[in-house]
Image (cartoon, rainbow, N blue to C red; front, side, top):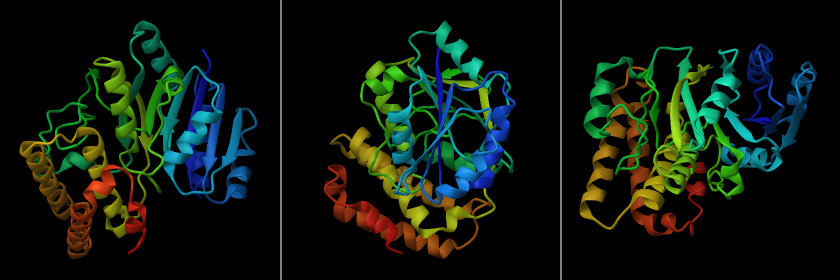
Length: 319
């Protein structure tokens, strides 16, 4: 069974080094590692030159898009199983690869796996207020389902293996058969491309059915969160809000007042979480204005967004 690892990156040579340092420690190495750089490829080339014991292929993609970079990796990969991680992660289980392969061997109907996401910082759900908001507005039932509002719930606090409707793109593996069927990440999504993983994996779930995707807590890695408060970035906030609407409108939406009510109800929760979370207290007024501006754009252009007949990324990039 041949394994391929795909890592999209953008001007993060230090993160790539830390990531590769962790890969070297595995008791079984990937047959190939595909790194897709969207920025300065020379710095990345210098970094990976120190890892001659790893079979690394480096590619350049001229557009800043994590989704497109992953698709480049898919096209280049030759493995039977395609692993995806982010550049700011480190593998903490020496048998990381075998954990996934053994589960695939024992469960031939499983097409994709993701696992526990550890963090180097205090947990997102440490706040009781945030946990309440998630349960009330997102109908979070401690599962990996996508609800009627297009919210992709997760249960990373739960240690139990369970079936899933979506996978986290920063720590997932799929049989290559999935991609030979033509499934790809949404190429319309740019930058770090929020929700591209949920859209792809939910399509896989719909195609292969219940039990095709699994959350496996032993399949885990460490995520090193940046000190930068990305949540105060206007473009990032518009991106998260708009791409989540794309997921809901293109994949979940049905012509019913109840479905629309579910979406609106959840978006109230999204705003409240951003505004009251103790780790996201900066620039609250700016965030609130950005939310209103984004919702107005969505209301005005929702039909065109649904058919990809408008370049909604221009709205994201224009501060």
